[in-house]
Length: 488
Image (cartoon, rainbow, N blue to C red; front, side, top):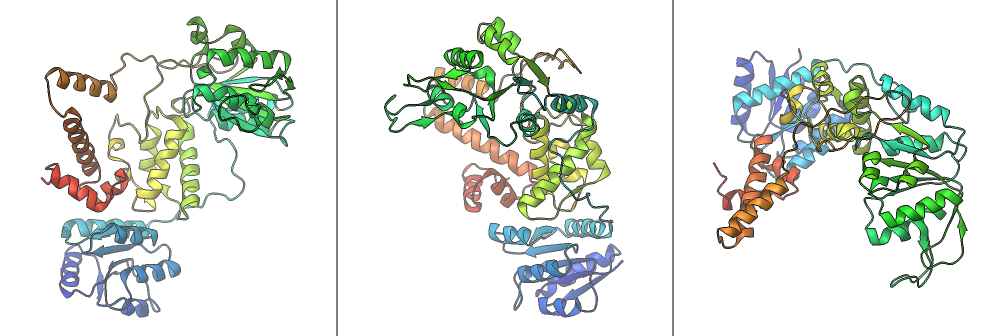
């Protein structure tokens, strides 16, 4: 093994690290200035480089940039007594392996250096094959049924209803249906029923004439007109208001619609693909969804399996999302160790594919090494029963089974715990009944204390990282820690 190089203008720091590494049987070479390192690099390279950030002449950040240009795979640990957010951001933007604030625990510093050595000794492994990435990834039998359905529907303009839990990729499938249809060269227009205010939804869908209502200063084409000759994707169709269900039914029945405030019928040459995570059969029984519209939409039903039914696809999807996150951020792609990949593959992922994507983005940003170990995962995922980052509670109702291929019922919930907002409401009621003054001040203090204490626990007390993940400034979190009495 090649030696670890230490560069710091502080002689005492060099002495401490040299002795600690010698005790750990790790070869070491020390430098007082960055320029000495640059000169030595012309003849040899270290196993790991540990550099101070503020030194006379070339700074640690400047050294980091030069080293990463010449030797991108060489792990560089940046250390500094100036524990500010700018230094941390500069170090990580430059490709640092890890950021080590002074004063540091010597044993932890040696453990970090050992980890960097392990990373540098590990083979990079085969690169992912180049080429065009498939629009939908999956090898599980349940996904094969989805692929077959897309193929069979490629020459048809029939209405399709896509069902599946939140995060399963319903819009991705809708776009695939469009791209493989005879309308592929025409517009694909998407509208989420749950994301548009109820009083604006009619205008969004059908457009409006000038002067149709206050503020309608010009004619506006709605989504049906924008999707002319193409595909209109109506997401979360189960949330469509009852009055609009009637108008949509008429369009699907006779192919004509009116703009809001208009009197001239307009023809709609549009293929409609709808999607929902709700059980429309139940909503029909409850009187919340028109039965005749349901049958109009439910010509072909395509059910997307939740991720828990396609665990074999998780490693493939994780590699894809890690590569995509790296491209978006302009960094080297992280890789999962076999142990980390196995751990992730065992997780339930109630948030499905979207949740896995969020986890991979988190790892790309915050995992210190290129090879992700189980210890790099969020704390809540490192033990059995953990729930991945970004998890959402499973829907209370599952989509109705599709009449054709692969029907697997979602497991029923034995109990639904009260959400934190329900508990908060109960606490507000309790305090007000007790006659407590300044209730909001007391609850705000409790809220901030809980959030900051939890963030510090997850970041192992690293205030800068906790502040960044909470969206707070360094000075702000320090001030709040002091005012809330969290110093201990």
